[in-house]
Image (cartoon, rainbow, N blue to C red; front, top):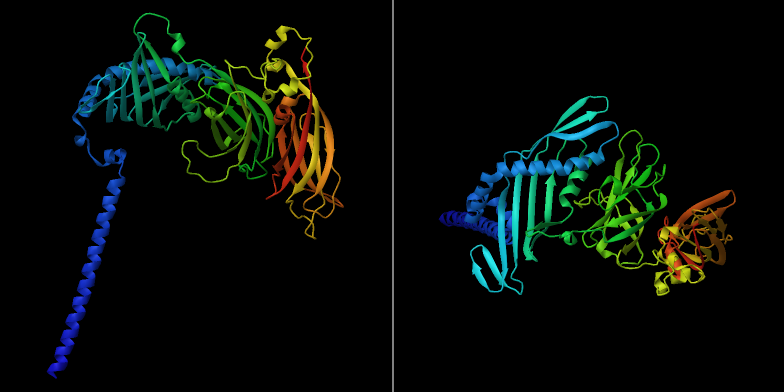
Length: 550
């Protein structure tokens, strides 16, 4: 009996010890896991994360000194800055003023009582000797005239802005603009002295959160352009003319808006009525608006625009596609932008841009469609075939073939004519070679395809013969089109399936004549929009005849 009791007690004690040890191990493992996660998080923590976690008292002493100094001088800065903003923004708002308003001005404009605070500071003094000081890194260089400062600024402002709107009937509408601002700014300032001029340039990132109660798009465009351009300020120290240091227009960007496809439908009944806004700087007189294509998710515009470029290395071309809503405001379908630094001067670039909801926050993966553009950047200091097609020194890649048959009877003044006075006229020979991977539309798993070729501007049409029961037809048919204006013409190839009582559209291809004008002749395959893997092979040849507008 005693043995049995001892066995039961020992088993219970052993079981309790095993449970306790397992619990201890689990607790210890969980603590070590939490500790390793915390250490890993600290290792990944950035400077911005540290600023969020640590209170202001942990900031370096020089930051406290700078913030204290800024608090003292802020009332004077507010007065000067408010006056400067009023003088800068009011003329721009006047450009955006609707015709029904007599004036659009600020009756009250102040930046508030809360001063910005510096949250980070780093200074690099560039001299001819090397030294390390607290808060200041001094590095050796050949230029002893520059100071580079990196400043992080945070401003939770309480501005007071009253917009005074006066109508043409004499009614005044003062509007209190509720504008809570959270501005996070990280900038690098470079101060240099050259020829008696203090040249202060800056680069950085701004994040401005606005919640206005008036037209947000108008205020946003007006203020953004006024505070972000130009990106250089020239401050004369000695008397003299330093206008040559300012940023000036340096070229022309030619944009051909060809088409868009797979646009998001914004209408409950029917399809969207898309139109496009294109700009480099969002000013009314520098924004181009296309015509509206009604009830179409795959619109074709084939429109040509020109834009002035001030700085090709930093500027972007922006395209916004809207759905026309009639009396109501247009609804944004999607937008895209293209950096001009990716363009080679004098060379045409064909691009498809994917549309997104917001250019700054790329979190939306929804397919909003694509827009098709053809871009050509022509700097002022370089010649282009589109600007001067009669220069005998042009290379073959710059439209020499397109103009080689022009007679030499033109005077020298002809070479100074702008490209707007040039009509690229000629004959386009289009050979429809073959197609591959067409979809099966008949019950037998085959199709009876044929191709319709259309010149979009002149509306000339031709079509191939019908080939029965095939998904990989070979036509080898050639058609000639007399083109009156090759730079603005568009060739459209539509692939159909022939039926006894009609025809079914499989897809289409669109292309400008720019490439064939530049190259003279080429053979290539083009994807057929509307099919999964269909391709159409074409051989194109251009026979030019250039004429001059009288």
